[in-house]
Amino acid sequence: MNIASEMNSEEVLRVKLEVLRREHRDLDDAIRALQDKGTSDAFTLVRLKKQKLALKDRIALIEDQLTPDIIA
Image (cartoon, rainbow, N blue to C red):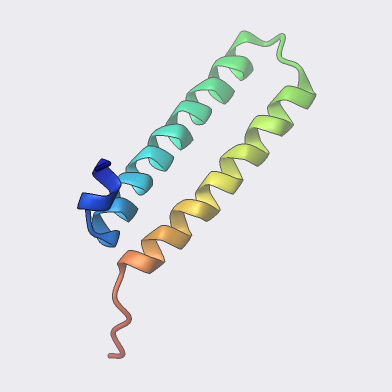
């Protein structure tokens, strides 16, 4: 048996969310390091920023799945 089969879907989503958040922070650190270096390649920065935005979208999607719809 693998671990994913033993976890319920909410637990799996929470693990995925944490992994995506970590990747987002790592990309943020990489972008900052390239910018601080001053000799960064503009193409590389654009590519990393697009990846970061895509991760942000995936994070938001999972957060929406984990947040119950409550009509106030």
